[in-house]
Structure formats: structure tokens, C-alpha cells
Image 1 (tube, rainbow, N blue to C red):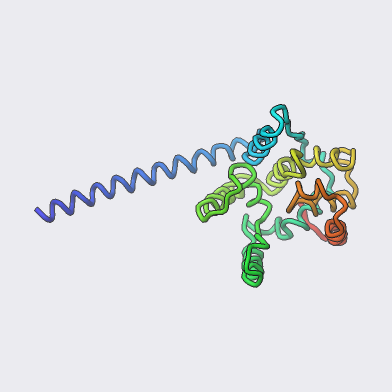
Image 2 (image 1 turned 180 degrees about the vertical axis):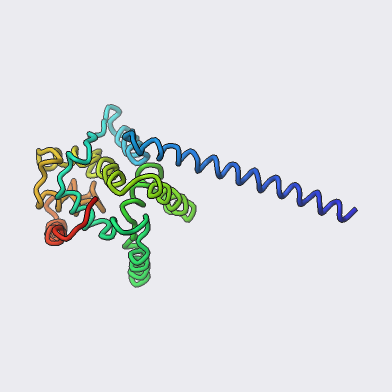
Length: 236
């Protein structure tokens, strides 16, 4: 009797585990299908865009996002270099994760006693922008890692950077390089100078803050640092 009971419990456990694995696979498959489709098709509104629009419409029901998609070739090479310098210097070489950068960020956070650095790569940021909310949790970071691996497996670096440049947040309701270039400088993304590109890249950690504080001395200094390093940046 005891043996039969144990056998029965084991079967229940095995079925439950199989069901959980199947649900997990289906859930991850939903992400993967989107990513595979976006290899050759441009994404629509991202999770971050939807959240920002919802927040804007709480104040103004007629609010709209400023977002215009442009192809990779219609984005200034200066901006591509500036973004790589500012956000992910090893973008060309890694497979989605900069382990040395993550280690440095963890050490810096430990010294400060709070989170002041993230170490996220461009691919990780794209994973978050496309699908995830802004909450901080172990589960969310784990899902971000899975999506990052999917993006790197399905897309080449050029496509990852193209999508990133088109969905990155650059101000209050401003998304993508084309909208940002016109919003701040009145030029298309293709016409950005080195100085302008460096300034846009410097804004990315806090784009809405710098949209309101464009005269920030720190922003100006950081943009100069980025511009000085841009000539050595490798882009796809």
C-alpha cells in the first residue's frame, strides 16, 4: 500500500512538472515568435512605449507619442558610434552579456551601498524595451536574460542596433533616433553631427530628465567624453 501511494504521488508530481514545463515553453515561445517575425519586420509599439503613452494620457487623454521608424542606413553613423561608446563598448564582440561590465557594476553598487550602475548591454536594454515593465525583480531579470539570448540567436548585430535605435526613449513621449534628432536639433537622424550624436547618447540613462534639463553641466561634460571616444567605436 505504501509503495502504491508513493508511486501515485510521484505520478502526480511528474504530471504537474510536465504541465509547468509545457506552460513555460509556450510562454517563452510567444516571445520567440515575435522576435523571429521582427527579424524581417519592424516592431510596433513596445512595452515601454505603451506604458509611457498610458501615463501621458492620464494627464492628457489626447496625448500621442513622437515616434518615426527609419532604416539603419538613414541613421547617422555618428549616432551609432556614440551609442556604442555610451551604452555598450563591447557590443560587436559579446553574445548579449558583458560579464566584465556586470562585475564592475556589482562592485560599484556594493561600494555605494545602492544601485548606481547596471551593466546592461544594448541587447539587454532592447529586450526590456520591447517586452518588459520597469519593475526590478529576480524573475524579471531572468526573463530579460532569456529574451536577450533569443535576440542574439535570431538577429545579427546590425538588426539589433537598428531596432534599438528606433525604439529607445529620448524624452517625454519621444522615441527613436528620428524623432529625437528632430525634437532636439531640427534635423533628420541621418544628418546628426558628431556633437549632436554624442549629446543624444549622453541623455539615454535619464532621457526625460535631460529633456527638461538640457542645460545640465554634467550632460555637456559627458557628451564631450563620448565624442572624444567615438572614433574608436566599432559598429555593425
